[in-house]
Amino acid sequence: MRGVSIIGVGSTNFGILEGLSLKDLAAMACLDAIKDAGIDKKEIQAFYLGNFISGILLGQETIAPLVANAIGLPKTAPATKVEGACCSAGIALRQGYLLVASGLANFVLVAGVEKMSSASTEKNTEGLASAFDQETEAKAGLTFPGFFALIARRHMYQYGTKQEHLALVSVKNHGNSVMNPRARFRNPVSLDEALASRIIADPLHLYDCCPISDGATAAVLCPSEIARGLNSKPIDLLAVAQTTGYSTTYEMEDPTTLVATVEAARQAYELARITPGDVDVAELHDCFTIAEIVDSEDLGFFPKGRGGFAVEEGQTLVGGKIPINPSGGLISKGHPVGATGLGQVYEIVRQLRDEHENQVKNAEIGLAHNLGATGQLCTVSILRRRV
Image (cartoon, rainbow, N blue to C red):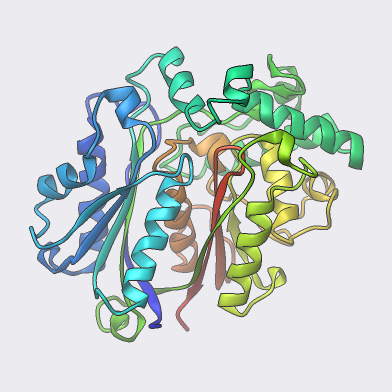
């Protein structure tokens, strides 16, 4: 297997992007990534596009070839849509990584896109709920706020996690996004504001929940041995692991642990030949504040039950033990579900290039954690600055 590097990245802003279609957003991010890579788009040999609910929200399926045609990719390059709920773009990255690593292609474009703001709240709720098992928990009326509220309550019961710990995740991530021009929300939030915001699913308040967004992200991958000759700041992609978790809550032995994350992390660390302590910066799937806390434990950054206390102690701040979501995360940057996984990678690449607006000093190794549905699937990607 060959080493794989990222030589170009592109991203739209995340937010309510009126006047731009799904195809427009994807094309913008893809063309930016190709330009950043410094190659001709005719050199792209394959294209993977992550997307979750364009069929439900917009009535538009088969979007990968539509985007490929819009940006002028070669007709010889296969264009494939990849779907894995909120993990769609992370899986697209893995498919491109495997294609380059295997030697079957030298230049692969990967992207993710979602257009959510043009649909009603009810339609978005319906679309997101399609990630549940329709024969069991969806039929019973479980929602994603409800699922993560169950996790939060159990975490509080087992480990003494406090409401303030959840709110502090939101405070931290809103503070981080002030610096990020790509973020949907760029205003700080106080602890009192977070705690006083309305209840969505007890104990989760409004500021504990990520917002829907429009957005697209992209990256160009190539073999590591030729990356330096193409780009002065290539970022090596040391590992992209993908795993499967439980499809229903009642199957989970311990709902405070998402086994897909634990196993993806184990595989990724092994492939990259690092430990959690080697990671300098991380972008984690904080669809809800409790998710960031659980993610940080499942990834091995903190002992089980200590994730919330670590936030309170400032260990996850920029400048802390392990800076988590310096972009603002899903909570504040936004969550265009099909684009999020590569949005995280985009932010990590900017960190490792020493180009980020909220820069982590001397960041050499970064981790991106992308979760799908109720932990049904997960990707963990590990990136390293070329030295």
